[in-house]
Amino acid sequence: MEQNIQQNIENKLPIKTKIVAVLLITIGVMMIPILLFGIVFSFGASFPSDPIMFFYYILPFFIITGTLLLKKKETGWISSIFLLVIAIFFLGSMLKTNETLSLNSGDRVFAFVAPIFLFILIIFLLLDRKKFWRVAK
Image (cartoon, rainbow, N blue to C red; front, side, top):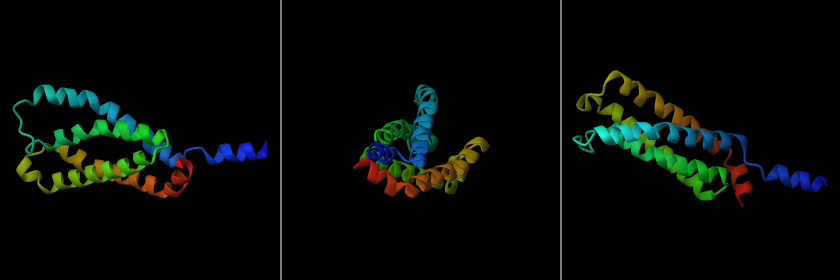
């Protein structure tokens, strides 16, 4: 009986990984209406000159990686780190080129706060990596 309880505890997903997975899914689900609204009203916008739309295009992949994390798949952990790093670098580059892109103040705040939030998610994943790999195998 005690061995079964110990095995059940070891097979649980680490709490920080659960937090990251739920937040990735939530962010992706919340941004889908914005993505659809942007697609409908941005037919005249060219892809490189509309960086916010590129960020919204990768957000549905956050749902996929969050789901893979909750299913304890190694590819979910790797892909979530990869997508978060891409999003951070992309949003950081938006801040560098905001004079040429003419971002409004709301977009500037988003481009400043979002990388900090995404960096915290990466830290959570990296802190629980050993526990996650033990559970995932």
